[in-house]
Amino acid sequence: MREAELSAKELRFALTFTLGIFVAEVIGGVVSNSLALLSDALHVFSDAFALALSYFAIKIASRPPSLSRTFGYHRAEVLAALANGLLLLLISLAIFHEAYQRFVSPPEIKLREMLAVAVLGLGANLFVMYRLREHAHEDINVRGAFLHVVGDTLGSVGVIAGGVAIYLTGNTIADPAVSALIATIVAIGALRLVAESLHILLEGTPRHVDVLALKRSLESIAGVEDVHDLHVWAICSHINAASAHIAVEDQMISQLEEIRRQVDEKFREYRINHTTLQFECVGERCRRDEGHGNI
Image 1 (cartoon, rainbow, N blue to C red):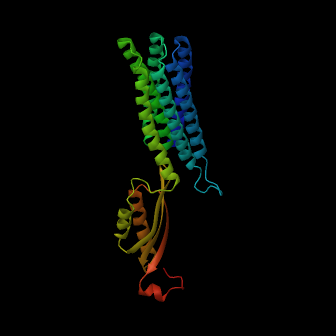
Image 2 (spheres, rainbow, N blue to C red; image 1 turned 180 degrees about the vertical axis):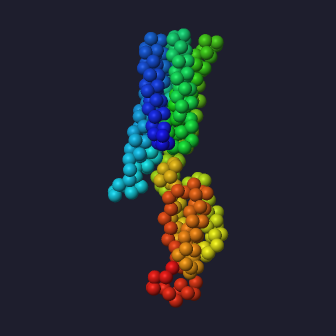
Image 3 (tube, rainbow, N blue to C red; image 1 turned 90 degrees about the horizontal axis):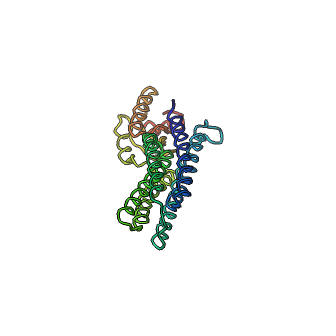
């Protein structure tokens, strides 16, 4: 099964579980009169929306290239990741606002019911995180969905910690304090996701590629005189592209093919899997034969 199909399968599984958590928290919030659980249920619902967005983005990205989309639809994954990052930031602001409201006017909470539902949600979120964790390292879109589930998990932990603190001390200030901490952690992850998405959309150089080191590596190949107009960018989180002008000495086509093979090998070392190369001839003979079609 291809990586995209695996990611879509895991996202579909996560979406189903997340919707189940949402229903459980709404029921638990109404029964326990817990504003914390109802607020977290809203958070979970927004995460379910984000998971659905990620799932459909993978489906769109799997469509084959066309004459109007020669690179295919891989950027749909990046756009979904950007949307998820922005949504996470909005959720963080909402949590901060809710925490402030609870500092001002702490709600009355039925601890037993609240803790029961929070523990159930924590277990479900941990299971979803376990299923998504491997793909989160390989796909920026899945990483955005994974961060949403992390936020849900932290939310469950916060509700439990706040409930225990309230039970032990009788002080309800623990609930908004933990909520503010959760919002901070979620916001940091969201900012990183937004920054990475924008970096790809603005065709920035992939973080792992040192362009000057790559240029020196290419110029170290026997027969290569110079490399210029070198550009490296990412189509999405797992497809990197490059274009370059490579100046070589006048030589036979068979020799040029060997240089091309070594050049492609150098690019693969930098995880660049799509290249567009233009070879140029340098030297006295090339200048004499300019305009006659010689390499």
